[in-house]
Image 1: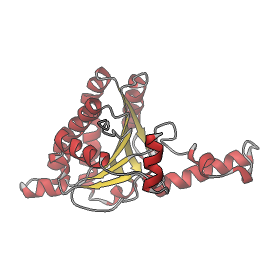
Image 2: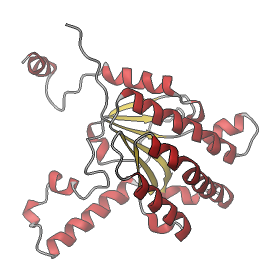
Image 3: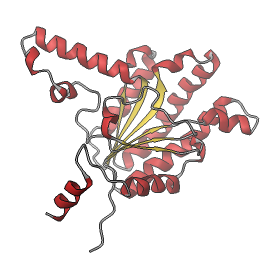
Length: 246
């Protein structure tokens, strides 16, 4: 009997390489960031086609504020243009859009656009698209710890009851399937403080392809690579084989 290829339920991507892509073309970094929008559309459409339930993209880390002011300003302007231009199309495709991270750092007009986009697409179910902005994995874990401590102070949670499961419900993506596949483009092989909690048992896929060149074919290859892996979660291969036969 032919084995059905495994499709990851939840994919996360560090979209790296926009600046180097632009530099190779003797253009400013903002040109690369703008070109990366095409890759976002490609990946969203690819996830819809492959039947992926959730996609989380690392768009702007809490460390990215350290970049040159001109580049940060260009990124903020790009967010505004993308929200104005892409929300209607995402809604028509049945995509639910959500922004995760410390949104308080953004100015009020941009936050209002984010909230409006989330409200407009809230009822969609074909794909959950999470955009991580002003986000860091350590920040998220600290935030969850604070929320757990507040629950203890209110008498809603006992200290002895705090474990991985109870802490998980305070994480940004708690209601989504566990992260299955973590992709990083651009040739770097590190997590860069992205989804540290969720990546504990994720399969890692690193590619030299720069983000603006990452298309549906690249996504499909990453999913095929995922499907060839044996996910054991601490068990032996023999146990996995026995379970699959049962």
